[in-house]
Length: 198
Image (cartoon, rainbow, N blue to C red):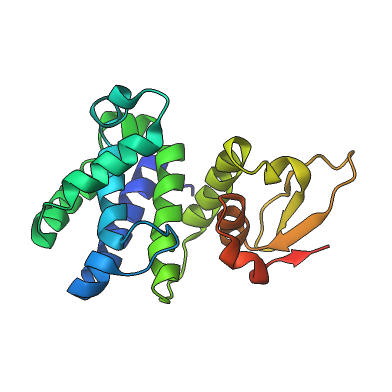
């Protein structure tokens, strides 16, 4: 039975908070992530802001990176305890916009969760729903950044149809897990050694 996207979103948010709960104060405040300019607390700040796009993004128009920087800067004034309290409310009660756009917000969340886990050298079992969300969000991000999705055929090795350049057009193939392929599409080049380029 398929789990509704809204439930998957809540479950992945709770898993992220479990990961953050397990970090030392130093790792939470300044630990390395795959988002080179952001610590785990900064990623949480960004994810909290995504729940309120009208307030967080609309004032910045076509400059979402400026909005992200402003969100992170504001949240740096908050103590960890307050951030985690806000995080628990965010996990249990996603905003209407996040629920309506759950396929997108789940992908962004899942990628950023892996940014923290992988950046700190941790390990976790990535649920199938999160792996698929990472793959599709990576594909979407690739369309607006590196266009890898148009140049390659991506073949997941963990039970998902291939995506990317159509079979009718010749293209190099890349084989790997949904998670690794999605992260690579999203520009996390550190996962390239997990992929097979053919």
